[in-house]
Length: 158
Image 1: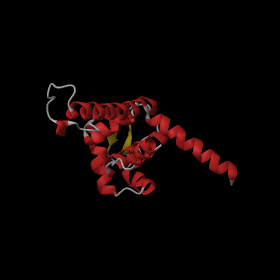
Image 2 (image 1 turned 90 degrees about the vertical axis):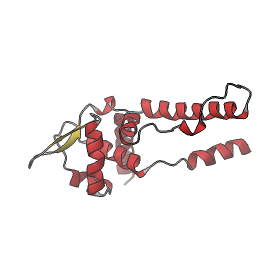
Image 3 (image 1 turned 30 degrees about the horizontal axis):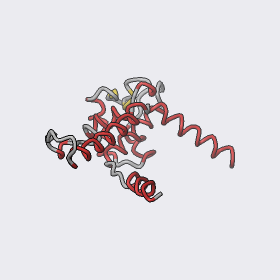
Image 4 (image 1 turned 180 degrees about the vertical axis):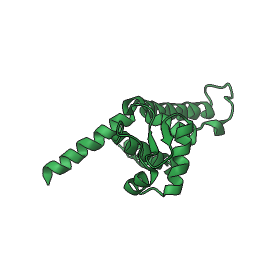
């Protein structure tokens, strides 16, 4: 029982950067408007409570990664470059941060599979693999659908 409590406590304390959170929220906002044309960053910033100057930096990184298309002019703005179901959350985080969990601090494998370092290295590799698997198999379309389902439930009870 205490092992389970400790595991849940660890999960609740995983740190995710604001850069990733804001970036994923911005992409979800674009996905909700997919096919409707470009969306201005000021609109996204207002809806998602993201500072507009910071959002512009995120959108630039996402555009360079090929996840977002941007156009200038009075009808310009940003739009998702692919269908929402074809964009994995892991792609967004990789574009903004690089790998989610870096194991660089572990150094080289010491060759002794019975060492404490080897056992803990395998644990951290498993954690990184599980997290990346979830992020790589969760599409932006999945998150949009979750949000729409929740909105419908709220509307039903009002």
